[in-house]
Length: 83
Image 1 (cartoon, rainbow, N blue to C red):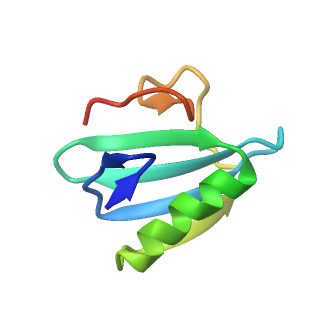
Image 2: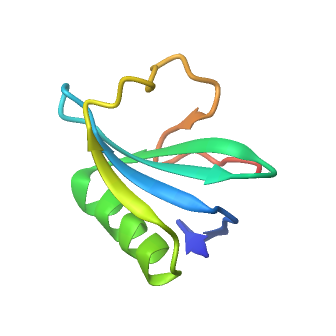
């Protein structure tokens, strides 16, 4: 699937809403691990819809306890992720 003009291969996705009001799309891939794509609510919803339309299992999680701002897979909406 294509998100932000980049191809991604993933086997599931999650729309994450954190207590601080920020939003992310978490992508999991058996080969590449986990990636976090940060954006505003509309951007993340569009990416989530792309995942849903591609047939991925998707869910929404509020207050993700696994999220860490220091996580190495964390990227911002303007960042490039080598995947």
